[in-house]
Length: 73
Image (tube, rainbow, N blue to C red; front, side, top):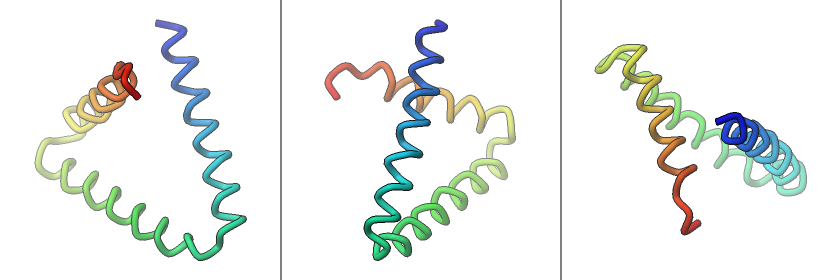
């Protein structure tokens, strides 16, 4: 369990580092990233309205678990 959380934190950290490097090296991707963030926030807000805060949080955790447990990637 602790190994899973450490891997999750390391993955998030690595994602942030690589993402910031890509955005610095390729500034043309900035509008695409902003659009992606807007879509994610809109999906999150729609989920909050429809299902509530606790259920939305559980859905997000379930998505991380599904992608984290997939060994084919």
